[in-house]
Image (cartoon, rainbow, N blue to C red; front, side, top):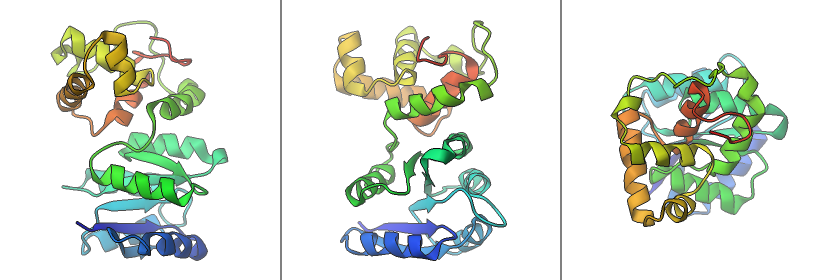
Length: 224
């Protein structure tokens, strides 16, 4: 199955570089390109895309708002935010807007390709520990939890075990690490994570981390 990719960046040279890398893969095809978020949204109305590589700083409509609008549409493509070290706040906003993860623009080709395949298969591409470090940096921008029980309409639906798993996901542990901590199989942990996503109406474990920080379940530094 060919993964249909869209490149959204106002720098033509960057799009050309990404296109060359993707074109060499038998399971990928660049089906569309756009120079800003507004153009990307227009193109998506008529073009079937599986994964969007989205820059953040662009004219007319930036990547964060474009991501928000794309993810609000029915059956949206997956979105990967492209960022640089000095634009981490944009990556954070992109995650909140619905992106499945973020990557650095100078990511090695192998990692870029692996990330696209992971997102296409339904996984989040950002390692939870990386997401946690990002959110730790910008936790002061989030509403203070105040140490109170977080408010979220669906949290009450979680079982005690699911809440345990959610806290560990939010603290940056992988499925394997959670399995070892709770003395469970990785398959069981994966099942719990799937149920958590369904009950909380979240797209992936990246959004679990965002929700945990926003509600105060996890505080800066990774503490619960």
